Image (tube, rainbow, N blue to C red; front, side, top):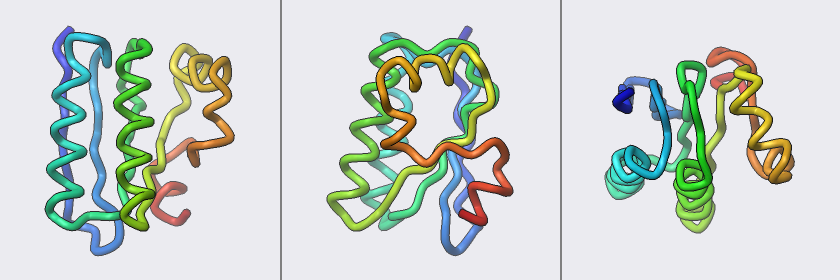
Length: 112
């Protein structure tokens, strides 16, 4: 399945990237480019909505960690929205649940 990205910058505080499909070695560069572009445009607070992600591999995870590092080095942050057990398991196994702020809804992440 192809990776779908929908970027919403209408919120004055957070830019939101809705990610759909499989976030893997083939599709992860598309997300990396979107994150880099948002940071270069001056967005510092991002939310990646992963609710529609069906699969996440180590490359996709690496892109998210890289985005987080890039944002934090620019006094920003990357929060996640995810309740998908298969995706959350990857964050649990790698210990990244303590690194990322993970919310169960977009509304919770925006309030964050």
